[in-house]
Amino acid sequence: MKIKRQKHAKKIITFYKYNFSFREPFQILVDGTFCQAALKNKIQIKEQMPKYLMGEVQFCTTNCALKEVETLKDLYGAKLILQRFQIRKCNHIKDPVPASECLLSMLGETNPHHYFVATQDKELTKALKKIPGVPLIYIILNTMVLDKLSERTLKHVEAVQLGEIVNSPQQKNIQSLKEKEGLGKDSEEKRGKKHKRKSSNPNPLSCLKKKKKNKPMPQQPKKTDGEKKKRSRNRKRRPAGGEKAAVGSNPTTA
Image (cartoon, helix red, strand yellow):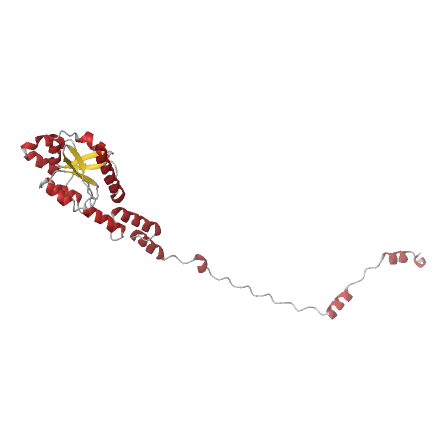
């Protein structure tokens, strides 16, 4: 019977891990009624709960649950157990409310913090079954039992698979993909800023004065062939070496 109960628990936990992103350590939100039932049935919660859920566990409660137990003298033992657990902040610090109402407010509409709820309160159990993705733990016949999946939880998962609802993990994945592709709000704003051109100073090269083109030098008229001949005639010819020798050998000068 124990092996069958653990297989049942493993199957349900796997379902919550896959469809609602539950991870270890599992957070167990406990109220006074569950602690009182554990005392009567001699169940050691801290030792047996991790074995039953096959994973690390973190027990927690709220100030409203503690104050409710303090007002009842018959639940003194449950008070001692609850005081050992972590106390999670609720919105009823100044005006405490019943534990059932406080636990419901901690879960909200979608149980974003992935709480397991351990309670013996029947009215609270009915209300929790209307919230998708809330595992319930209670005590029957000296044993802890993880409740079967509620109809609300199954319908929610079917709607997600059909694409009618987008759960929180899918929303995060979609948002991350949008940011990578540049489709998010931040990226659109950045892209808009990029397209807006800033007013820049004019190009300094365009401000330079244009250089004046040098005027071509007037071409001198070419000399004609007649001028060249006149110039060549005016040049004196030098006597050659043979003529000097002939002048020196003249007999009349002797």
